[in-house]
Amino acid sequence: EPPPSPAESDAAAGHPAEETAAAPAGPVVGGFAGTASLLDAAALAGLLRGFHGEVDAFVRRESERLFEQEARNQKARRGFQEVQDLARGFLDDFAPEGGLPDPAGGPHGAG
Image (cartoon, rainbow, N blue to C red; front, top):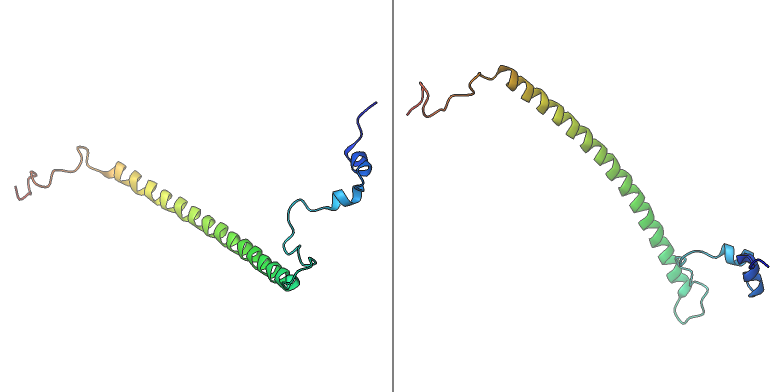
């Protein structure tokens, strides 16, 4: 006989499958709002939900801004590398054969 499925085990334990499937995976922000307490739990839960929403919006907004900034940085880095390669190529092509003379010991040096 095969072992019972998870849904059958939950039903046998007194947990209907709909309730176990609908349960959140982690804690719910402000999920304690309905808890009986001397504190104003409903107001605190509302504040936490609002704060959570603001943090979520901030993180999304700043993440987007940082991705755009990184894209601009990469574009500038590629442009700088291209100019550096062009300048290096120019200097390699037109530099004197023996390199530059030593300024102190050259024919026009102060030496």
